Length: 249
Length: 305
Image 1: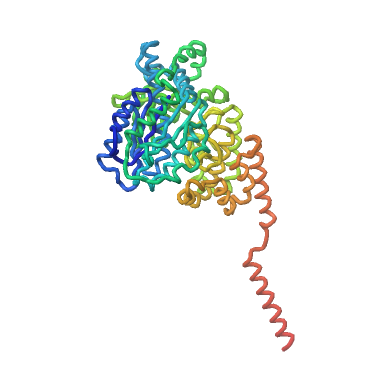
Image 2: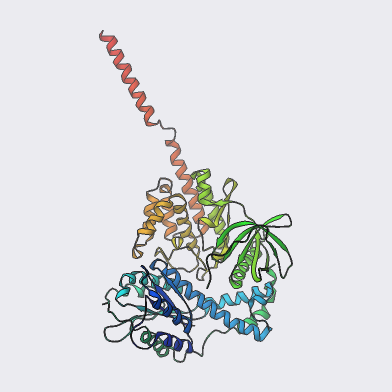
């Protein structure tokens, strides 16, 4: 399961539209979530609507939060996206196998069984999150909170049973629109001090940065659409473990 | 997606189970958790607690955990029913639990005196030890999730954070979280609960300084040593600082050992105080000295006169 998490504080102003880039990501099997960080209401109407649009095009969700809430929000969005993706896959399976539209339509004992499988999948599916960080001048006072949010997210990723990787980009770079700071890693230590040496610049090439992240997914994992959630286990589990559903009154 | 300002249901609302057909009458809101609201309710004449959720899967996941816990512990079941109800046109999932009366730890201590914390702490560790032996980690230990009733009896409520050992903690509260304090991972293991238990007591007895610390400390400076600093400078916690040091750093062999070590430390702390208890208060010694002085001077006056 692949996600891009964009952390920004406002409107892009250079290069391809980030909304188009996000749509492209979604097309390639990468979900795009956006956290808009504000501390003094500086995001503006334009920035806010762009943030919402990027997430909509990228099949993800967006939140506009203060630096204090950033860690929690980043975690919540990552987790919810995993849960949501699995739910979609499971619901599709339910339609095909049981002819019901969703988990809600199952009687509680059956539901208990399905949810158990969903939880297992959520915990064990391989997960890759590329964090794309807006480091334009106005973000400077917020980068400490961003670093903290990344550290916090990596802690939660590390605790998962399944393979969990994160990579960090920031934009703009000195020459190129976007720089890879930390390649795929599953260790928290690698995210020590990310942006200590950054020289802040004015432009905000959000679109090109997203394209760079998509490119990186492609470079490291080839065609990404192919491997994904396999709710096929749902059926097997159901047949062999039918007894367990008896626990729930 | 989810809105935090959920509407409260009014007392008297009847929930009718879609699948099992039981009718429950809501009495009052007991609390609001991360994935739903908990109400005190009645089924016929029996009291029970009902958790109404926003999300079927989240709620069912919790119910699953309660069910497997019931299955494992073979006591009176805690989970009584799982069902859906129609409320103003929406299907709302809910589950029904035993009603546990009691108040949150901090409130209890404020009302009945801090001297209760030794007993309550021991009981909490014993309860955690049962869960840990069954392969679970409670995860979301915090003031609101531990209810204390008469004579310091405790019950854990809100099992939303309960996690199978070895998996990622499902739900936690920042200031009780081991990861937040850079004291280790978010992987469920018994030590995760020891850490939160240590923070619980600091929170229960010294909330002001704990909250001040979390507000002012920079993220990169969060460290269990800071918490230990609070322990060592608090009169009731200081005698137990050895226990806290081990809990904050995960240095127990088992939760059983953590409980025994707590009991001994509490015992020693109250034992250490008792020889000093009959000690003469300062003012009395002062008065005695004064009267002695007076006596001597009177005698001197009488002798020399």
